[in-house]
Length: 156
Image 1 (cartoon, rainbow, N blue to C red):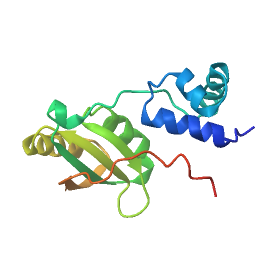
Image 2 (image 1 turned 180 degrees about the horizontal axis):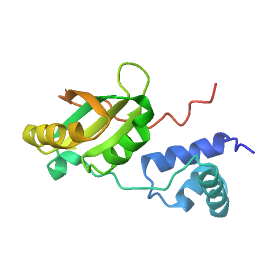
Image 3 (image 1 turned 135 degrees about the vertical axis):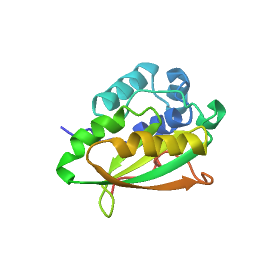
Image 4 (image 1 turned 90 degrees about the vertical axis):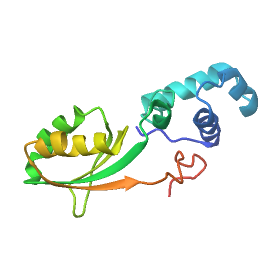
């Protein structure tokens, strides 16, 4: 059975997205329900796969990873994608990997500490993975928007 979120769930989610460490009792006061009800609702949303844990957000730039790049990856053969993903997953600088439609098979987001580091990842790591035919790089000059999905938007 699919869990249907209601207005109270949306309100809970909006608080948690802003600050995952906000006490449940504070959310309960704002929602006009008990702390136990908040715990139950959060648990149900976790079980339904709506919420996936909580985490701290570490800013890569603060750790010296000043270069953000996107890499379009073209495979020799699309049937190799599972093997290639296993190899890409081993690269610590790759922070996202999307299997996409269009010209590329994958679109990667990577973080490096310099252009030399990026070049090393491209030449000595990515392009040496069996099954990768070609890569194309896009260096991000600035991230202009970063946000979560709008919790208040209802499903269409």
